Structures are given as structure tokens and as C-alpha cells.
Length: 498
Ligand code: C2O
Ligand code: CU
Ligand code: CU
Image (cartoon, rainbow, N blue to C red):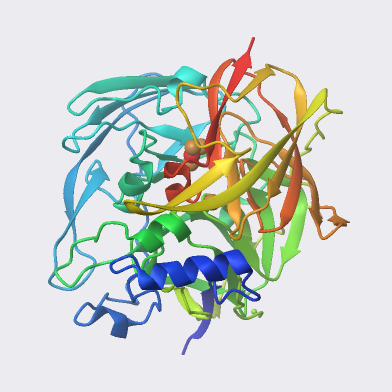
């Protein structure tokens, strides 16, 4: 007999009080033929007709990317983006692009202090690609920016050093101009864990990476292209997968504690996560460990965010999160089970407790200057139909334009103001920041703990204030990590000067 724990997610629901603009967009959507969303998103199998994804298989551990280096302190490997065939539904082939034939891509594990040299081979077909090292402190010219494409058929080496103190849960994905959203939802993304040589978390907890991705399948097993609704809301598919599987099973002994790294690698899915019947402690965020563990009931993980947990397999249930939605096709699904944990009757041998202190985090110093970034959505009807614009300070992305010039080593205050109808997860390349304040309807709230982050959700109508310091010169991107919004222009260029 087994007792089960569940990792459940509640997802976006109806606009609580649609503002006039959202309502108007919805009306325009439904009068334009071919512009509505598809009818899926309910996560149930009935929306899929014949498509059935197997459930309840043993959780697949991500394959490690083998280190080919002959000397210690160097991590050397090759990542080839190439066509592959996935089998999500029984008896159906899904053609995808994959890194080394795997989706999610192979798990990269390296240590603080290591030198990393990864040869990237772009063999996906006709398109340029890059590898961006999301959240990692790498030099700007090694960070896979859209300005540095790797043409179809070409190779390049990405090389960088992992500084001390950089241990954390990062990830890698393509960042070519205009094609990021599609290459990622089709399967190009993987986890990159930088480990500390002096890790305070007991090794007995294990260290399991869970990459959450989003999948939509057509009746023939292929992945449909983005619709107009996908472009507006960000692509939300029909299934949330864990390491490429629907609701896989993890087996643990009674009383066991497990260390889990959760990645939201979806283009646009807001995941409100809770372990049913298992006390959960947050120990880390995007950029590594917190100062001390924090108990958590439920966790909102917006696109591109990561969270590191220790789960003691006993209670809260799932919940809804409303992130704003335009037009038809909104996801309607609370209580979706993402992962099932089987807890055996046989108790685990005594497990060491989690230490009360994990590591110090020095607060960033007082800012030398402050900047204000206002996120808006616009809509225009023209001869070719409706055009949505996703803007920062009134401008759509232009690769040839520098939007912000900053000085390396100088702390800045960034105020991200969301004046739009949807939540926008804000991300900046090349560094980790500290959120110190949120403001909504004139009410200011402070985060309950200090953390290193590279992506933060800015809810509609909210202002998030953060402290940010770039240490390395060169151009850096900042953008909304709903990748369809990034594609439609919600991105800017920050030039860091030495
Ligand atoms: Cu995940 Cu521009 O990044
Ligand atoms: Cu990034
Ligand atoms: Cu957005």
C-alpha cells in the first residue's frame, strides 16, 4: 500500500474583471475569421480526440551531458541541435528539433570555478540559432544574443568561466532573432546546474531536476504552429510535461526528504505549484540558495523562473492563478497533477536535517541611479488585419538600437511598471538581481526573503522594483519571457560599458 503525494498546478483562468481594452480585443478576435485561439488548453484528453499521452511511468532522469575534458576544472562538450523524433502519444511520431537527440536537452552539471567550453553545432535545418545561457554570468559575446547568430550548418564554441558563488539552477535555450519562441516550444531547452563545492544541503536528499515544458499536439502527432491567440497570450499547449513525460511517478521512502529543482521552461504557462500532503521548503531561486530555508504553501513559477525545494513527503492543495488572458482559448484547469510521488511504507533511515543557514547573500548597495521601464500592449487594425504590439517604454525591439547604457560594476534601481492587461515575466541577461519592493494600487509590499533572481513576474497593474548590477561589459538583452511577447517586440538592449 502506498500513500501518494501530488505536485499539482493551477493555471490561468478567466479575467477577473476584464478592462475595456481586453474586452474590445476579444470582440475583434472573434469577428475575424481564423484569428481565434484553438479550442484546446483544458488539459484533458478529450480536447485531443484520439491523442492520448501515457501517464504514470517512472520519472525519467535527465541524461547528463558527458564531460569530454581530460583535465579537472574544465567542462568540455558538444551540443548539436538536430532533427529528432519524439514519441509523446502512443503510436505517434512527433518531429522535433532536439539537443543531442534529447528534449529536454541533456542536463549540464559543472562546478563553481570550472571553465566551460561547449561546441554548438546548428543542424536544425534552414534556420539560424544560438545558445543562450539563461541567468549565467557569462561574457556578453558568449551569451548567444540575437546579434550573434550561428547560421544553419555552422558550429561555434561558447567558452566561459563559472565564478565562485555562481552555483544555481540555470538553463540554456536558443535566442535567434524572431525565432526563439518557436525553437523553444518545439523542444530546444535544457537545464544547466552549477554546483557548489561546499554545498550545505545534505547529499542524502538527492538532487533532482524537473524541467516543466508545455506541449500541443495535432491529431497527426505534429506540433501546430502558433495561432494569433498564441502570439497575444503566449503559447499555452495542452499538456504540461515533467522531463518530457505526462504525470510521471517518483518513488520515495516514507519520511524521505528530496531536493528538487523545478524549471518553468514553458513559453507562457504560469504554474501555481503545490505538493499535496508534503511539506515544502524553498531553499533556492534562479541564482542559487537563499540565506535560510523558507516554508512554502504554494509557489507561483512564471515562465523561465526556477525554484529549488526540499520536500518532506504530508498537505496544501492546488490553486488558481489569474494572469490575464485575451480572446478565446484560455486555459481552464486547476488541480492538474503534474507528478505523482509514491511513498513507500518502509521508512527511510534517519535523514540529516536541513541546516538553518544556507549561505550569506549580501544586499546590493544603494543604487547610483534609477530607471523606469514601462510595459504596454497596443493593438492596431490595418489593411492586413490586427496587429498587436508589446512595447517597453513605447518602443518595440530593434536590434540596431541601444536602449540603455550602463556602467559595469554600478548598482542601478530598475522599476518595471506593468501597464498592460497581462502579466509579463521580466528577465535580464548576464546577471542576477534582487527584488526589493512591489507596488500595486499604491500599496507597497516587500518580499519575505532576499534572493538572487534573473526573472520576476510583474503582474498586470503592478510595479516591481529591483536592484541590478552588471559586472561584465557588452550588450545584454532584457525582455518579457513570454517568448511570443519577446518576439513581438517586448525586448530591449542594455549596453554595459567597462
Ligand atoms: Cu531565457 Cu533572453 O532569455
Ligand atoms: Cu536569459
Ligand atoms: Cu509578456
